[in-house]
Length: 165
Image (cartoon, rainbow, N blue to C red; front, side, top):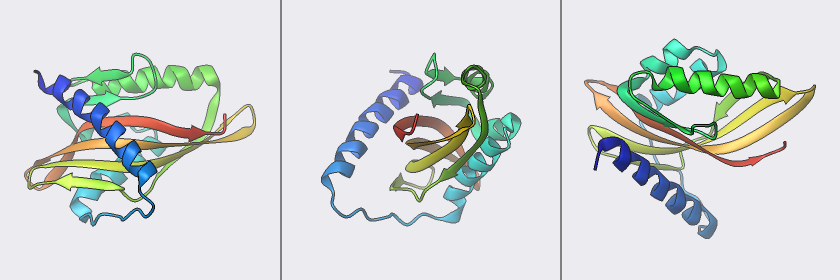
């Protein structure tokens, strides 16, 4: 099984497990997370809010996988971010989205070792369509790989959990 297939299968199973665990758990405990692991996630939010595709791409490994609610739903390889940004941009323009802003919550799940990490991060996305403010929530599933002292994103997956549209 190829790495991309394995990672995609792992993410789908993880979304299911995390969603089920969230529903059945009354009290959610927040995992401890070090700044080095959180830094690329924060940089991703900043770059997305600035529409800085180059900065987003620099946060990812060469053979990154991106999954999102925009067709074709999966992008892989050295140009994954570029193609995802293009496809997402087409949808944003078609819907007339303006004044968008993303904000992350604290990670709800972290599993890591010295070189790899799996992180679930709540995300809020606010934007305007036709003069009306919209609010969308979801979960990022992020698989990270440590290269030297730097964590890079190997997989970025988004699952919408709610919206006002």
